[in-house]
Length: 315
Image (tube, rainbow, N blue to C red; front, side, top):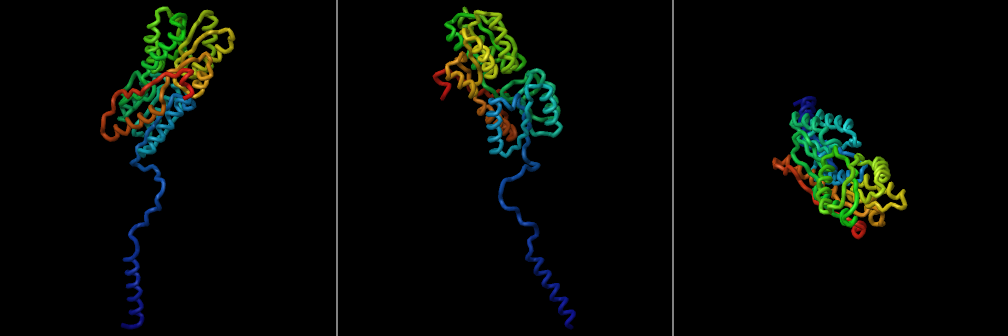
């Protein structure tokens, strides 16, 4: 073999040897946080009001549980506006989310969007607030009838079983209707208590303040009010506090931190039916995980409620 051919042979052999020792694919990246992949379950969530302390706690628990299960959440704020929530639902549908969670702004009005999700074969779950129309896999919420009953019984006791009361209401929301149902059952134990009016305040603090002012002027002998959430209760409290000679007694619903402080301070807000939003959030994600795993979650997952007063509000 001449020198030229021998040089070419050795070069070719070296190339083959290097090729045999080289990896056939790039080395895997160093371990670390994984990014969502096409197999990650994507869940769209539209909350009634993301700025509300109740929904903030619920969202925090959902986020924690979803992270543990490897789900990707897309959380939107409906801002208590059905005209905001409907497009959010439609976007989730067009994006092909694997599941949708909705806290309806309007229990009947949201039905059209849920029906569209049904037609797209996207499972829908409701949390905290029930929908009146459309097929829902599972509803996860407080036992609102029981919470309302506890509030009614406590207000009746606080009033000594007598007097005129109002319900500061929000009847387009199913969970509020359930609270009202329970309240009326609880207050019915006191036949000398009369529910004189049920003005709607939309769960809004300012509307509640204004409605409470109107009720106190219309009924100078008003004895008490049931407030369907803590924003309502705190608005009503401000109205009552502006009348230094008022003896109106308030009972609220939720157990938010600000309301707890008002109860502990001995204000006109004497008690609250208490919800556990973190439990609702966690159990909502758990129900979705069961569905993804081929299990059938219950149609209704009730979450316990309680009652706090001045003695227990600070705990």
